[in-house]
Image (cartoon, rainbow, N blue to C red; front, side):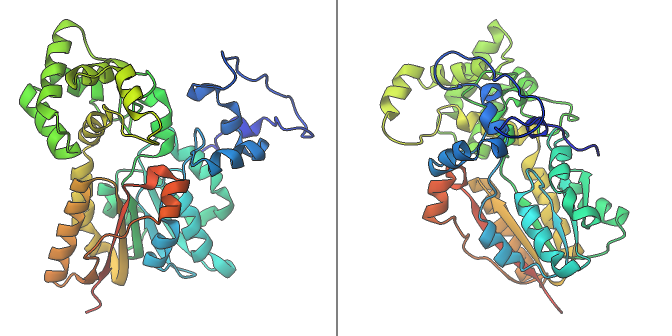
Amino acid sequence: MEPFKGSDSNPTSPGEPGPRRRRPRYSGSHPRHFEQRYKEHAASAYPDHTAHLRTKGRTLAGSHLPVMVAEVMAALDPQPGGCFVDCTLGYGGHARELLVRITAGGAPGRLIALDVDGVELPRTVARLAEFGPALAAHRMRFAGLAKVLAQEGIAQVDGILADLGVSSMQLDDPTRGFSVKHDGPLDLRMDDRLPRSGADLVAKLPHDELATLLRDLADEPDAEAIAAAIVAARATAPIARTRQLADVVFAAKRLTRAQWRAATEGAGRSVHPAARTFQALRMAVNDELGNLRALLRMAPLVLKPGGRLALLTFHRGEDATVAEAFEQGVARGLYERASTDAQRPTPQERHDNPRSSSARLRVAVRATA
């Protein structure tokens, strides 16, 4: 893959050679839109600004903070020369930590990395280029893990990691359709090769199916009202943009944006009224639970005896699916032990990275006999 040539490829900080870019023009004293945050897109050129945002618990536009890194490394216990799988490469935060450990001292460690995001995958591969052939990246759902390992000539691995959260790059970029705060196309596909977008589901699913999605995939308390509001709104005009859908949800909850802002002012981070609706549609578009179940079935077959499976979930349904599979795996003798309680981020991490707040880590160890 060609290395990504982004903002940092054009030096902008004082004293660096090369042409300087004119900053994007915007009204007011601070950029409000994703594409205007030029300092965040070129973080290495503005270290003071980057540090300031980090102290406020902000994730830089176009970047991602890996969740529970220390806990994940302790769970997987990567050793020099080990062979691991990162099922969700994303920005590469967990992958970098794994690569550092398995290649320590020049050891021939290997990391097989999977991701379906055709936009972010080449960028992350370029960021990890220093590790050379130790990293093998594939654009593949992690339900296809067995196929990828066969292509790589690997029968079993020492550990598998899957971080089931949405990356900040996807959330922050309004062109991807994940944002409830900024207008953009209602896409919601992590993989643009998928045939159905969020707009397609909103346009075609009947009321009962919409309500079921909202309840089962997002614990939405107003599922029936929102489903009814979507059906009524699309009869007048297609719901093709994120702001349109957010407006429908506000109406279904009998709220205005001004009322919501006034009610949550000074309360710190609060969940957007449409966040659960977007979550349910995203999970349905990308078949996230189906993909997870496929990985849970496959993992015991490709883990070495004593190998470890670590899963980071961000939703009650995902966590329950993992907990049930681990319990059944222990009962069947596939795992010698597994988490009975999920580990959560520390209070400090939740402060520094608010997007980690809902994370739950569970670990299973493959039986040795």
